Image (cartoon, rainbow, N blue to C red; front, side, top):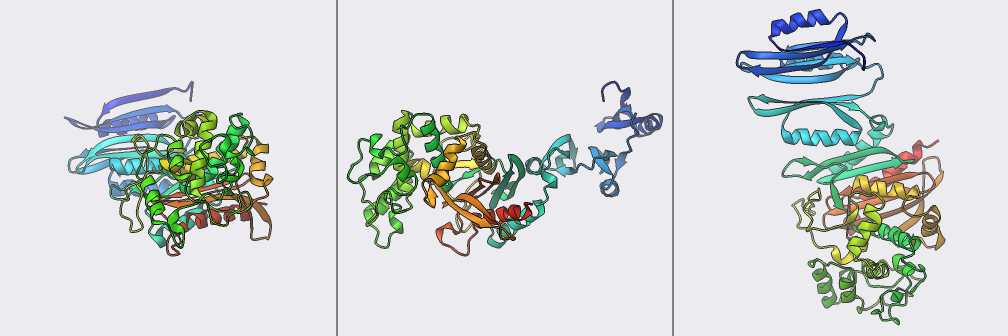
Length: 512
């Protein structure tokens, strides 16, 4: 609006403001209004600009709450809210507002009389939904300080055709299984199509979950580990993915750990998994696993040395048999740490988090209170006390916001973390259905067309996680929750994987 003439006044009584309105309205439009208390009563301030384009507008100075709602509803189809303000006049709260023509049809949002917590919750919700704040007011009421806020659409997310379907699917999951919170992100062809948190990050405090809250990624960490392995190879820190793991960890028993880096990161190293999952577990190893989850380790070598002399999987052929093992990723972490000469927590942050701009995607460090984490919950929805994950950073010890997890997938597809050639080898070069931390398969849409899919799910205390990519179609879906789900065998619990697959199905069905 550069070069436009204008006018402004303040300290006006209601009658003076009305007279000022009459003088200006013929050729100008209002762009700001403030109502505020003084010792002499309510006063008004107004700013006007020349209305050279003939924009339609409405101005109200002193509406009751009911009157403001009626005005808002009557204008919503053709005018957008620009400004909301409020002031206590005697025993009544009065509201002022400006509405402008909305010829472009961009969506807008308005909230008033919000507490500080409500304002914070809605602020983050609207950012997720693709709006920017264009108006903010703070005012006093008989109930205390309140806030009004106005938002305008700033991205295509509010108009994404599948938004309603995704909202409905996640709400069903939340309601059917009483999950405290679920967050979802969708990226398509490098563009963020959907961001949203559902439920709460802190139930007791009433803090809504949003796409920026950090949650546990659980075993989705293994997919991150596969990418880290490839990145270190392309950086020259690992000579070859076919190197024996013992090349970087001389303390390994060569006859027992005769696996390569590639075999280890693809669950073909025959390293044991959680002992408690065996039909006839060794009580000492069960206790060892439990103890590992109580210790904060500063390196990957420390926990690896504790477990690498344990029994291998009975009857498992290294390099041939697929045997799922979080413990194998603990040994992998020690090997990568040794190869790079940097402690694993620092290595992940330097090589992935910081170098690739992945924000919150990094090893979980419970001593870092600066992270905006969601609380995590037990199956009965009581608040859980987090266990330590530093013993297996690459197996189950990463954390991320859903926005950054989806961003990781998008940057991976764009060749911004590892080369497209390395990514393609990671998913198809081995010929294995589970390769470099990723499950590789396909999904069929409603027309019978088949799409290649790579994914990883995870579940642990206070977390159910899922990351799914369609490498040939530029699609990324990420789902995180703050309570463990069906991944531990409970059919009556929620399932982040099912949500992610359904969301992916919606997108596939919409493709031409």
